[in-house]
Image 1 (cartoon, rainbow, N blue to C red):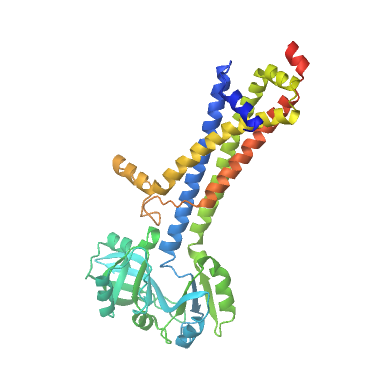
Image 2: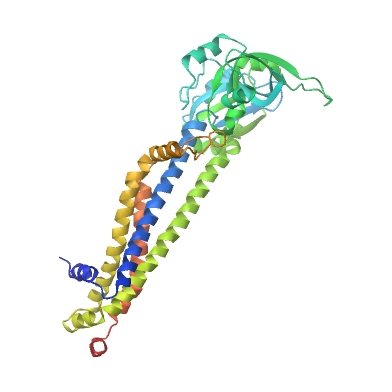
Length: 410
C-alpha cells in the first residue's frame, strides 16, 4: 500500500479530538457531492432541451428557405429542386407557398401562417405525427387544411368545419382593398409545441399558389439538411449562387433564440455550479488546516523517523482528496441514477402535487426532458477533482514546513 495513502487514511479515520473538524470534513464531502449531482442533472436537462428542439421543432420548421423576390415565384422550380437535391449536405428540397392571413370562424379571427406543400411530401419524421386517416382526408380535398392545435382550440374548430381564410390583397398604389376570402375545410390538427401551435397550418401547394397569385406554382423552396446547425452557412452559399433574385432565410432567424437560450443557460449553469463546488472545496482547506494543527506532533514524529517533506505533503493532499473523492463518487453515482429517469420522476411529482413544471402553451414541450452525456459526467468529475487538488495544496505545504523540534517542545 502506498505510504502516503496509508497515513492519510489513518489520519482521516482516527477519532478527532475536535468534533468540529469532523463536521467540516463531512460538509466538504457533502458540498462537493451535491455540486456534482446538480451540475450533471442540469446539464442533462439542457441536453434534453437541445434534443427536443432538434427532433421536434426542426422536424417541422425548414432548416432553410429560398423565396422569390417578386410575386411570380421561383422560376422553373422543378429543375432547381432536382439540381439542389444532389447536394450531399441537403436531405430534402420541397416547394412551398406561404400565406399569412386571418382564420375566420363563427365571427372569431385568429392570425395564421398557412404553408402550401405538395401532398406527396408527407413529413415522416414528425415527433407528433399526423394520423394516416387525417393525412388521407387532407390529401383527398384540394381545399383541405391542417391547422395548429392552438388555433383550433382558441376558435373552437373541429374536424370537418369550414373556415374562411382572409388573405390581404396587394394593390399597386398601396391603397386598402377588401381581403380575398378562401374557403377551406379543416381536415385535422397538427401539434408541434409552444407558440407554433397557435400560428401554423398546412394546405395544398397548388391551392395556395393559385389563391396568392404565384404564377410559377411555388413561392420558394424549403430545405431540410443533414446538419441543421450548418444552415446559416449552407443557405448563404446556395442563395448567393442562385440564378434568380431571392430572399434567404434559415431556422436560426426564426427559432434560433431557443437554441441560444439553451446554450446560455448551459454556460451559466456550469459556471455557477462550478463555483458551488469551489466553495465546497474551501471546506477541504479548513479541514486540512485544522488537521495539520491537530497532528503537528504526529508530523514531527514522522519527520524524526525520516519522513521527507514530499511524503508529508502527499499525506495531506491524499487526505483532502479522500474527502473530495467521496463526495464526487456519491454525487456522480446519484446523478447517474436520477438523470436518465428525470422525466419519469418529475412526471410523478407533477401528478402527485397536481402542478405542471412546463406548460405546452408557452414552451415547445410540456415535460422536462433529460439526456445524459458521458462527456458531461467526465468533465464534471475532472473539474471537481482538480478543484479538490488545488484546495489541498496550501494545507499540505503548511504541514511540510512543520519543524519537529518546535512541534515536540510545544
